[in-house]
Image (cartoon, rainbow, N blue to C red; front, side):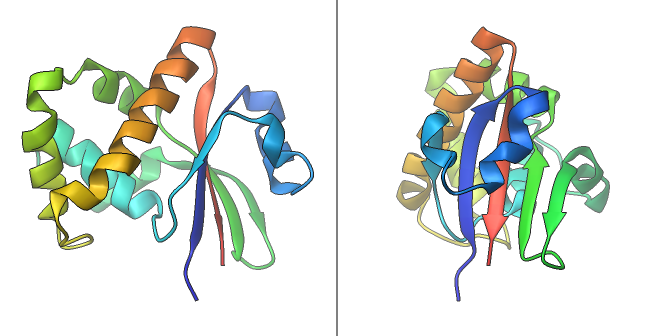
Amino acid sequence: MSVIADFYVSAADHAIVYDNPDEQATFLRARHNGITPLEVSTLWAAINGRAWDVAIMEEFECVLERDRGERLIHQLPHDFLTDLVAVPVREHVALLAAWARTDELRCDPADLKPLFSDLLGLCEAALDTGKNVYMWNSL
């Protein structure tokens, strides 16, 4: 069974509403299955040119946990949003290559381009509107 991963933009006081399937269509969102905060944290490490460390995971605040962890919502750190948006376009290819080489992904960088593009767009939208980006995972 694959992990469902939805990224979405929301105000903090409305973020957990996403766990209701009837409400999900009302959010600016993107689905990229098989991704957890771990993989996103490796992107953040790559953006900053540093080795991944478990302490990075502490920055991804869990705002909802249901069914013994089968459904989770994490808020992506504000600094992640600003760091991703600040990456110059000319560096995107190299960043995708570095991210694809991580132990957690080990894939072709081209496979990550849709996820990267969606994350970038959601981060821009969140910063423009004073909202946050959240990640909903479900088993």
